[in-house]
Length: 86
Image (cartoon, one colour):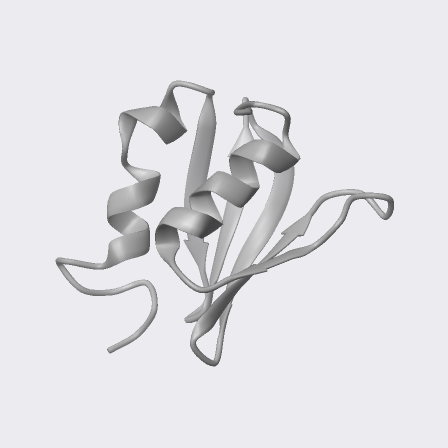
């Protein structure tokens, strides 16, 4: 099954959550293994699925990249990288 398809896709469920949307973030599935994250129409970063893990690439050369192993950890990494959640 493709990363962006499936009724029970864990990432799709996490990105549809209130915790994610209340910060004005939006997820757009691009390609088979990537999600583009925007906030109020401005590019924030990209999350990619890579062999059993999720890699978060935030916008900006000085921002740290994260590698996590679950959708919950990926969501937390995105929110922390944008200083939205402590």
